[in-house]
Every structure is written in C-alpha cells, then in structure tokens.
Image 1 (cartoon, rainbow, N blue to C red):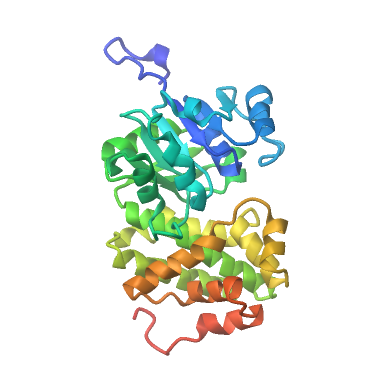
Image 2 (cartoon, rainbow, N blue to C red; image 1 turned 90 degrees about the horizontal axis):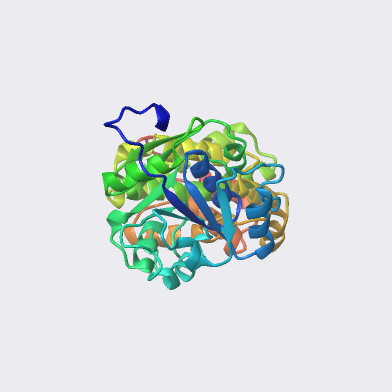
Length: 347
C-alpha cells in the first residue's frame, strides 16, 4: 500500500536515513537495496573518484560494472558526515579493518542509531565475531547491532535478482527496523535472534568455499564438491553449537543457503581465489588475480584459533590454513579432507 492510499489513522512511517560504510561491491549493492526499499542512502568510501561517480552518475564501475544505481544514493569520503543523523549504519569494510574504521566514529553515531554488520569474518587479534567488534569499537550496546547474512551474491542482487537473507539481532526491534530498511520486491529479509549462529555461518562458509575452489582448481569434480560442502556444514555446526548457537540456524538461509551459493558461484571471490590456488598460483598471485577481498584468506586462521580454543575439530578449515599459510602443497589438500577416523556419519 502506498503512502497516499493509507487511511487517515495510519500515517506513513518517516523515510529512513541510511549510511553504508564501504563502497565495494557488497556495500554498494546493499546501498541500492536500501534505496529501493525507500531509504535515503549515503555511501562512504575512501576513493574520491568512486564516490563522485556514485553520487553524480549513479554508477560504481570499479565494483559493479554496467549496473545503474538508484537516484536516492549519494556518496562521500567524509565518514563523520556520512554517519551523522543516520537511522541505520551498515558496515561493509574488510573485516580485519573494521575496528580501525569504526573507532574514530564513536561520537558521530547517534544514540538511537542501529548498526548493521555486512561483514563475514572473525577478527584475527581477538577471535571476536564482527557484531562484537562493531559494538566494542563504537561503544554501543549489542541490542543496537544487527547482522545480515544469507545467499547474497552482490552482483546478482545488484541486478535485482530475487533472494532472501537473514537479519540477526538480540533485539527484535532492531531486527525489524533493519528489515524495514531493506525489504523490497526482490530482497526478502527474515529475522532471527541467533546472532552467534548466523555470524559463524557467514564467516566459516568462506573458508569452505576456498577448499571447494582449490579442489576444483585441481580438476576434482562434483562428488568432491558435494562432500566438502556437506562436511563443511558439519564443521560450521559443530563450532556454532560449541558457542551456544541454535541448531536450526545451520540448515537455513544463513547456513546451507549461503554455503551453497558461495561454494558454487563463479561470482564468489573465495571460490575464485581457491581456484587460482588450485591451478598453481601463489597466494599473492591469487589475491591479485581475484580482485577485491576474499575474507576467508585471513579469517581461516582466526576461525581455526577459535575452534582450537574450544576443542572443536575442523579438518577442512585446518587443511585450508595449511595450504594458504603453511606451505602445504595443494595436491595434499584432497587427502587431508577425508583423512579422518572411520566412524558413523552423525558422530
């Protein structure tokens, strides 16, 4: 129902002001999603040329070539100006840079502003999930933080292809506000109170996608891919349950849904980078060839550290760390994925 059709006793809700910190592919795409949902959106980025192109030409050719952005989006290189007065601030910077970006903005974020993590990783220095980093860096209560995660490949959403996502928060009010800010004809949000489970799904699925990419780069087929995806979900679930997550989260959109999309799509940077490694590139060469940030490269180590501290076995994650950071030859990855003691599947 449009605003001018509402009966007199149901006034239209005021238009939300939203900010996205990060002018990469996912940040720009989520800005477009919120603009299509009716928000006035400001994107913050470091590159002046990119910000000017977003504001003046409604394009971001560096990250979303050929995509026309909604007119409700503007952009700036001034982070303080971008967040001041915003109802919703979405954070879409590389996970290992989040604290550095956010801490200087503590005084600029309003007392009722909701902050949304679009990041998928675990901080290396602290093993904290991104929602924890956001709350700590901005000195805000966890009830004002939400997490968005699901089968959300940026380029497909930027072309307005239908998808669904999960918005997780300890506060139902916060989750519903974020849902209002991004719900549209092609973007369907579902709320979920399980922040821990949703975040771990988003972080660890990148690591599993690296393993799938490496395997396919070595010429291995769909049997291997299905095995790695399925056992990868077991690893994600095992870690999540050890941290108190809800078991129902893992077969849902944030778990299996996101895992399938990231492991199977050529648009996934983690899958793409893994493929380059499997075909013989060094890590530096693969990063350069992939372009953009493949979060799993760094977060695989922090995920493994977190799992080790909890006594949780994650053989796929361990194998990826050994290939990327400890010099294990890629030909030895596949045997490691299956070199486990024989036991019942559900054990």
